[in-house]
Image (cartoon, rainbow, N blue to C red; front, side, top):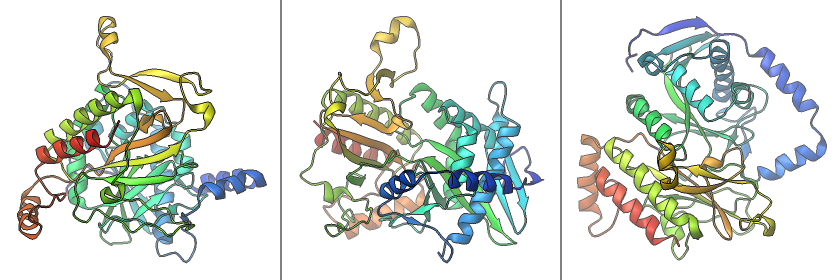
Length: 396
């Protein structure tokens, strides 16, 4: 992948050894009760420990991300955003590998706008505690990781997907500024990893939609179609964490109560934006969590606030016309909507598939292969419309 201007910078990376020692020290001071609670929250997830096929890659990613975040901590972006923020490529040379940080200043600004402290980001992704793996139902060849606290999600990408993401990044950031409670996944970083003189591998870091995960009972990946959209559920009593699909959701509804109109409108805005980018094949991630009795209704113990979701405040006179959404006071509340009985975790993910020649040919083949059935590869306009129709039909 050709590096955009200005030219790439290459520096020797600082050692994450201090971070590793700090993490180990912090871990040693945790009490037994905390560790048992942490283990309970991770049922069905697997630590990537020594001997795991992804352990070496994980260790390199952790060391590289620690050093990359240190750069943004030592040299935080200042002043107004520039074009260079979106085109910078920084390569840090480690012993035995290189880690590239693409559009680092732009993502540092985005993390700051989300209220995410760089120290917390570095601690969660750096050395100290292993990443987690779950059984993915995705058909892609990507590798998936979760930070140990399950707050951050990492996924490998193809170079073409990275190119599309970086090309759309300025418009993506602008969309989030206009719609601060958009359902779009919050992308936090794009990186490349090259071991010795091997081929570069790319990965992204994003906020996990399913966080905090402690009481989540069901997870779904929805595309609004039927072909290849069934997952065999885990046996009763199994500890596997499975993400189910459209056909598994048949007969179910999302009961949002007064938040339904907000959700439908936000889906329209976000899918219209993705349609403008000529993007398709994204998913609506969705999870359920039964509310406790004291969490229900406006008099609950949670702190609620009015959020301006559709447009940023243009003027004081317009504030009454803002789309209203009630957000619980939670660390990752951007993806949380409370209904009368359930809390729903909702987010649009996989935003990098462009409707080019390959996808057009795939659509033609699937039209012949699956006559009369719905499948994921359709035009961006049809894809956006169909997913919004699915949401309208399955909410109340």
